[in-house]
Length: 136
Image: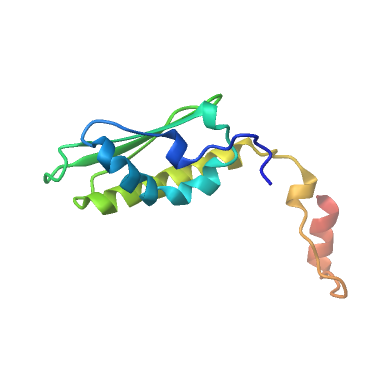
């Protein structure tokens, strides 16, 4: 169960911008559905996504996905893929990576519990490993 009372989902937070119609919204939301697991850690009221495309289906089209989460910097991803489906997948995957990176940056850095390397029972540490473990 999620710690967030009203978790964000793509279907709830997505807006379509320039270059897309409301009719495209459901199709795009399906393409971005894999982001739901990553967005679930944020409140729906504090999360917004907007996708737009410049020069749709032209040679130099550019797809942009913007993400606003309260208390965090805006995240912008872009793709210049010529195929619209591939461009949407590209910005989706890039947003997932950036959200993961942002989460990693917010985790505690100097937490011995996170740095500790578990050694399976019954396997003795080598001398060099023992010295490294003692310095941690």
